[in-house]
Amino acid sequence: MFSKILIANRGEIAVRIIRACRELGIKSAAIYSEADRTALHTEMADESYLIGPAPSSESYLNQKKIISLAKEIGADAIHPGYGFFSENASFIHNLEKEGIVFIGPSSVSVKLMGSKTAARQLMEKHGVPIVPGTVKPVASVKDGLKICEKIGFPVLLKASAGGGGKGMRKILLAEEFQSAFEATKREALKAFANDDIYIEKFIEKPKHIEVQIFGDKHGNYVHLNERECSIQRRHQKIIEEAPSSFIDPQTRIKITTAAINAAKACNYFNAGTVEFLMDENKEFYFLEMNTRLQVEHPVTEITTGLDLVKEQISVASGNKLSFKQDEVKINCHAIECRIYAEDPSNDFLPSTGKIFYYNEPSGPGVRIDSGFRAGSEITIHYDPLISKLICYAKDRDSALVRMNRALTEYQVAGLTTNIAFLKLIINNKDFKKGKFNINFLTNSFMESLPQLVNNSGKAELEEVAAVFAAVFKSNVPLNGNSSKNNFKSNSWQEQMYE
Image (cartoon, rainbow, N blue to C red; front, side, top):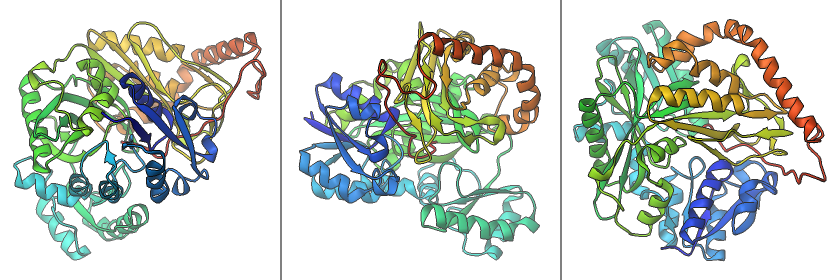
């Protein structure tokens, strides 16, 4: 096992990894930017090192400096968390050359799955169902139109190196193709330094279902069942759950088998997630493979009783998987809500400022993964993910009741959050019945949002009043400064994670 792990990340995922290291008896070394000098992960780690200025390009994405620091402090391995360098094949390759273990897959596997077109080719070769479309980049508008005529509109144009909803456009008619083609190439080049794009048939009313897989360096593979990730805004997940209420046992066998085949196709090891689109008839198609730990991994941990971060570290150190497929069970139902500092009523615009009061829910069946606290500052530098609220119970209905209770208890004052918005979703009758797909928020929910907000206005005012009452009762000044409470400053995560 390793003696010291450098954590190349920040916020809640850095805290999560630090805790795993502590339980394993491994020293943790954190990095932090100037904006994160007093962040929670910085204080919790056994060692902490300033890596650079606030902009991520000068700190958390400074590859040369991070590798140099790892060598200098004698770190055996680097855990990337998610985001930043977690899916950067070049970074992993450089670690491999330096003899530093990357807690994740090989650079070869990441490179294969990093290109959406290359991944589609590989999946097609190994019998994993893919969405009808191209397996190579589209060279021109003329070629693209020919393909669209063959598979039929509507279609999606997608960046080959893309992710997180960037570099993606839906095209309904042939007349829209040229302008969309040119715009998508420009966006792909700007976001990913690669303007290759490809075409997929647009699947009507799909669900987004993903399968957690794990492999070791000895050729052993397991799946940890599926997660339901269809509740999304701007193509980014905000609510995830496990298992999916839409999946029956027979479909579960089919989709998890396909996920294992996808992992074997690229000689994968460590934690990974194979994502699929599933239509109303439960036919599924490979979407992409995320070659890292997912934001939503806690719902899988809770339903299986496994610690995925500890397993990542163990597998990276050369051990075989600590469990076999027949030991993986579904013990309960778990739901995760991502708590963001953003304004749902204003196109989810990020909210900046200092958290001057922060109270997390607790009690039976509640877990919080957070890297923030009272006094933390939400700045423009990083992603607005504050925490992940996970609730679990014996069945889905009970888990939803528990989530509603926990969201009601969650109090954050000083900036706008999506907590009330999440409550509206959790209490929506169609959501409760499992009648939703990835278009749920756009087509079935956002149109009625103003009315829903107005109808819940009295309750919201009561919640705000409760927060302010708690603030003044504890003698915490509104500016967050207090000699009684040693408030610290923090920031956002690096990017919107899938």
